Length: 187
Image 1 (cartoon, rainbow, N blue to C red):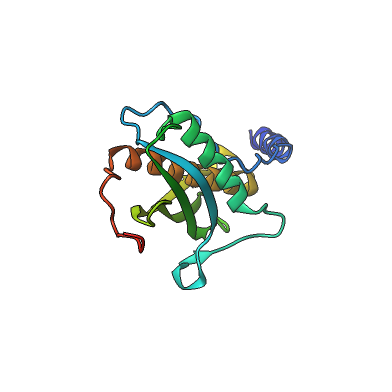
Image 2 (cartoon, rainbow, N blue to C red):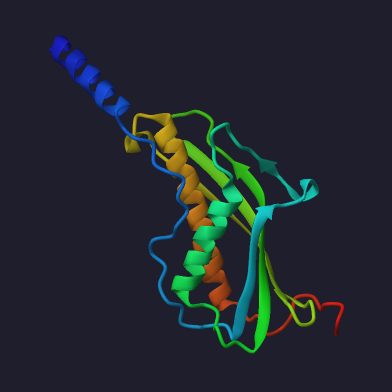
């Protein structure tokens, strides 16, 4: 019996060693068309890291691709599929995303990653701040997902950012952006 268990454990380890690490992919799969579209046209979308003073914890590892371009691509995809902005909208807007936290999973049975980003929508005509919100998410991938820590860590990062983007779309849908949060300088 012990011998059989050792052999099964050996094969499980060998097979898990053959597992491939998933790519960094923040694309949200379950984005549907929103019920409430915003009467604005998205002209510019930028994603980058927040200034040092606004950052909580921003980690990166060697070999980890640059996160902002991948985040931007996934966010643009979610916006396009949700149809949240109108192409013939009255106002033209910029959407700026500043990543304030990427607390990546280091080691453990369950890999936990925490991400936060500040989303701001600015009216290009007058500089009015129409939307400003920091969204934080945490994703936990349990040991049962994969025996390889790199697989769990990568999937934890993917899930945390996907949830962050999804929460932004959901929050934006129910937010009235016709009333500025802060008036711009050209009013």
